[in-house]
Amino acid sequence: MSEQRTIDNIPGKEFKQIVDQFIKQAAAWDGALPADAFFDACGTLADEDTPLKVDAVIIDNELVLETPPESPLTAQGSRIWLEDGRELIIRLRSLEPMQV
Image 1: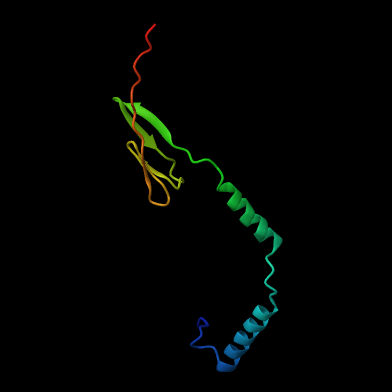
Image 2: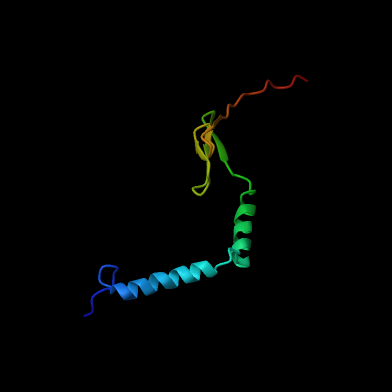
């Protein structure tokens, strides 16, 4: 069984060749972003415009809010916490019936 190659057991000359090859490849990179990476990033950013969903139900005259597990929002009871730490409190109020 052969020993796993690590920085500690590679001969110095071979290690220097590996580092030199890495530097040569890095220097050849022109900084251009491949088209597929660009379009993947654009798609991810475009998805951020997707509406955030909060489900609401009234139980015993109390508002109960829930968010999907993948949501950046957190909801509990009648409170919603935004990504930036701000908190929204939703209060229910009843309207007087209209007089006819």
